[in-house]
Image (cartoon, rainbow, N blue to C red; front, top):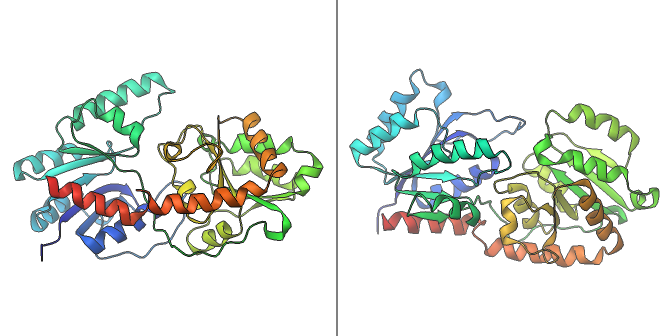
Length: 349
């Protein structure tokens, strides 16, 4: 029996979807994950700390801890979860001396702010040129990073997917729309509010809109909620409570101005929801407009048109929802598939 591959992941904070991936990766490899912090803006979830988790904010000398643990562990690969990690230059110098391979795991970059895009591109170029490879979050990111690195692997985020889930379509005989995300401008919540305000009273009577999340826009959301009783705000939900809401929902609304990938759409697909999703979300590269949902430009006009389309033709919701479940099971966004791919790629080093 071959010994398990040894992997170290260094990342800023804990996120729910990456915990799924790490848990599955731990079953098939010998894994250590360094977290700089357990706090993540606008996320308030609890998780069970595992022996392979190492929280650096608890350590007096984080860099010394990293060096010591890597020395003892002798990993086959280090994965940096981002390009702006603290101490990364020091760690890379250490890895070079020890002749340990390292990858970066990077999302696509937002090109809207051209100056910022050019500066960040330059910084990343210098980093990845000397690395052993890049795990790109999607094919668009792969194309970007392949300009400066010869070993770029399409490796989007992935989630744990249960083959069997409870599913209730048209709960309470209504079309149940759902928004899940940080309540910030980038997530396009203001477009959703603007679109819903333009619905007729008859259209409003046909739907329920559930909103999940936390963030700076909560204050402006409160007056909107008072005037629209068909809209329900749930605060931040995680794990079983969120999954129960997915089970009772029909269409996810994901109108982000920009998202490097988009984990929430994957969670929704795994629970047979249809999608109204911004074309600026990386995950759309695995979707087809009209087949898996409606892919829109992030603005209130197109969002309103999409909502009305589902109100007028609710039959397409079930078809799209079931297609989405099949698609996500077979895709690289399933942690079972992504774990196997990573192990295969490490074996090539």
